[in-house]
Length: 505
Image (cartoon, rainbow, N blue to C red):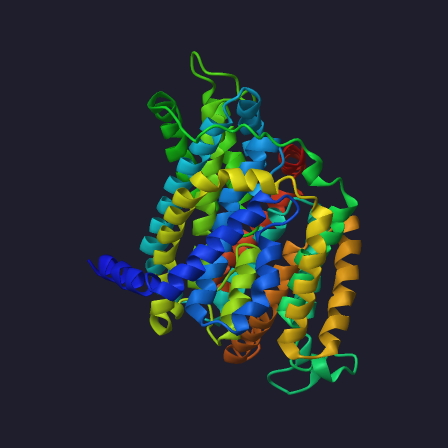
């Protein structure tokens, strides 16, 4: 009954005119960036992060969340129609979705993706509502050593699940931790790594690094690639309709995909992406049933399972971010940055100090998923036309918007110079196949990890074994060691390379 009361309170908050408008704006913008190849939720949330300075916390977070799960929804459109996923978690959707388009079943594929996404999104949101308070209660028993060990586990998990070289991911994580130490030391007041710049004494602005890497960096990278808009787009997509017979075939895969996505969504480092691949692997292991097409040739389950998995994962990604303060990916790190703008700390106390924000966000996800289902049926024709816009026509407006946003953060030209530096750095790192997600996670967790490490050593009188004789902390560190050991095994390395090679194929 208590859960129902909280949900009812959340709906009362989320259903106000202002919050509904921001939820609608987030869903539409998220679908748009999901549909347009070359953009994505990370770049868009990074570009809009300065806007949260002028918004109240609830509408700001509702809009950003709508962008995130709206992009998961919109990414399937290009994956199905032109075999070009608008979002990385829609990679698997191209395998059977595009095959259905070539067979003249684009309307059926889009309808199935929409229904699977809606169901999985609702399931993921329910899991978020039901289990986040319980996890937050457990987190109240965490001390400084447990939080430090948990953050170590989050960073190791992000390294393990990064698609690039493990050593490169580790290097980027360490660099992110070092960047997080820039500024004045909280204890002594001494400045560190500022190189004499007074503007860095308050620390490195997360929004600038995120916008440089995921905003400008992605724009420059995409301009060097082939223009996605040059792909042929189908103009004769019929009405989005799916027969009951097809729905019966796809329904078990939707259930399985929703369950898999829910589990993978809480993992650090791209849970939604891995969830879609895991779901597709499960469906392939079950094999095609009599009368079904082979996988990769328009199999309904090969489309429904992964689409459900990545949308369920997108919702449950919020669980560790909200209840533990541990981001499971770069978007969640940006969400934490948006909360910190309003002096709201993500973690177990958010359910006591900012319960209205938490339950309004949960309720807005149900509303947002319904908006996506209702709106995108009539808007599919518009999304198809947008696919014909050359990317080179879009990037000047994006660059202008980003630059103004960065300048507005501190009203200082130094921010623009800092942005330019990280743009060059981000592009060079991208060329050398270094990923940005581990760096972002290290940057957002660096200050907190240092604080919890110092607090732990202060309370223990400088005894480093404090992390080992506390059972929960020792367990978390043991998991870190086990993950590092697994990553060093040759068989795991081969399997890992194979999985991510399939993702890039």
